Image 1 (tube, rainbow, N blue to C red):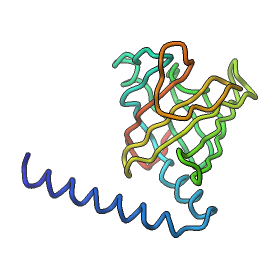
Image 2: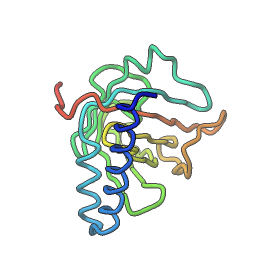
Image 3: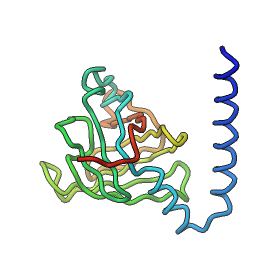
Image 4: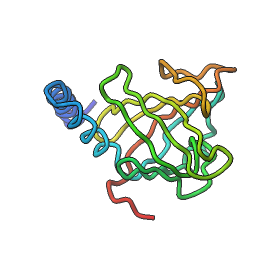
Length: 162
């Protein structure tokens, strides 16, 4: 591993530790604002598992998610999200952090999909979702028969685009 890579890893680790320490001193409302800000952007699906089956690499590459604070949308037919577009609410005070997604269109319109999320660092996040109107996952696993969808995302850009 190069010295540059080691320095980058060390700097990233320090930033993550500092962010975690700061989050411990924030009010609940400030934690919500901070997480919405961190979640806002254009995201590329890196990997996913749906009901125990890995998402094909080509599908992951074609899946982009745009989040703007509490609004989300998939600009293309991804087939891996909770719904084509909708709103979501977060609760960063729980462990794991909780998220509820309300579908505004499609076959699950009006249904809530409960999930959990983790902001790994400024460029990476993950989520795990139950089935619409079903129970919330308690961990980031998707075994066969669970009906869960687990995803890892990488930030493309903070600019939202179309």
